[in-house]
Length: 423
Image (cartoon, rainbow, N blue to C red):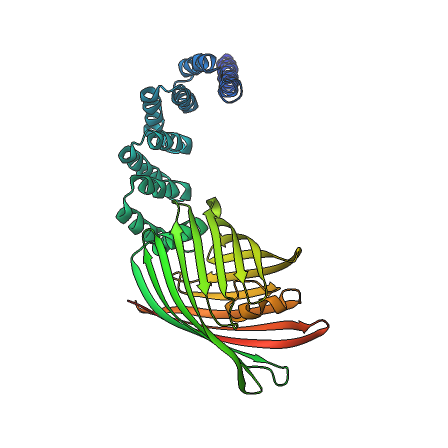
């Protein structure tokens, strides 16, 4: 009996001692967490780096395995420009436990800021290995290649990422931009046939022959357009227009469009001039701001252009607004374009809807003055495809409910064919 009581007493004593130790450890954990939170606040809010540094040193003494203190200490050294010490503590955290994403991010950003691109690439490769599911590190690797100016590495890496993440908006946008900067030459023809349900009116024929030259600096396009409009099966007007357009890269994320067209025939405007500035943002966003100018037989007018585009996986959606000024009156027009891309920028399905008449619509540009103040509702779709390495073809059909005089409307159906050959 005494033996049992003795065992029972020992058990109670061990239980009390264990609870006491656990409470002490738990209390210490709470104190250490509080210390860390205070130090973080001093860094991020108060900018009191000296006081925060002392608290991290105390935290390391109290809990030497608590890596958050080492990480914060590295951050303090980075913010106070003691980069060697910052690098030491970031590497210490990574070596002890690579689950700390912030340690990788801080170290990569610091190497990029100091233009230590080789070291940054080594660290980002470690980060990708430790966190293969995190696309953020794969984006940083792309940025490193861009900053290095290593075109070959960047192009190969983009192809790899495009295959790995075919629906990723940022990679797709970068991939298309890089693809347009590669050396390429194409020749092509376009043909549009437009029918009308108004008796004795139409059809219209429109065709163009073009040459496209793409280089690292941008591209230039030379084009000869031909239009022939019939009425009661007799040609009512026809003529030729000469055009030149260029897309010029202003930087890694922006480019400009410049265009000019001339025609001595009334079927086209005598002069067509255009400019737009495009800028690409993160997450697949793009904006454009521009202007158009048309000079016809009877008048001339200007147009302000504002557009916004977005990549959503394999989709590209763009809304462009036109505000056209004629005799102190503003006439708006809107075009919504959506595309679903497959493998390349030449392979896609497209759907287009719009209201009004704009100076970017080639087949109706000769009638823009007559149509400007009239209602127009249109919708269309098409498919474009790259065959092999050289042949690009496409077909599109669109429907337009067009007011041709106040209160009277006609239905227009346009068929478009395109063929290009990559030299």
